[in-house]
Amino acid sequence: MVQVWKKVEETIETGPDTGDILIPLRRVKCQYLARAVKHELSGKPERAEYYHEQAENVGRLIEQ
Image (tube, rainbow, N blue to C red; front, top):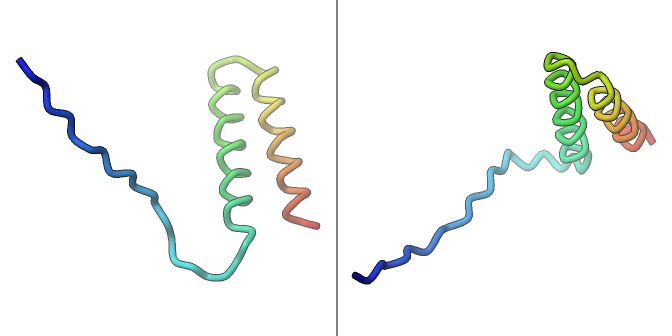
């Protein structure tokens, strides 16, 4: 039996282009904060602290 492979089309979610180059950094910061909350709820404060620290670092990049 021969299996036919289908080509997978990559999809990239994009939002409207507002010209703000800081949007990707803000998105990364939100992702770090969400991971921190996830780890806090699962009882892993060391990991949560790491993600809070990374979110703070990205925030500093945004504020420059």
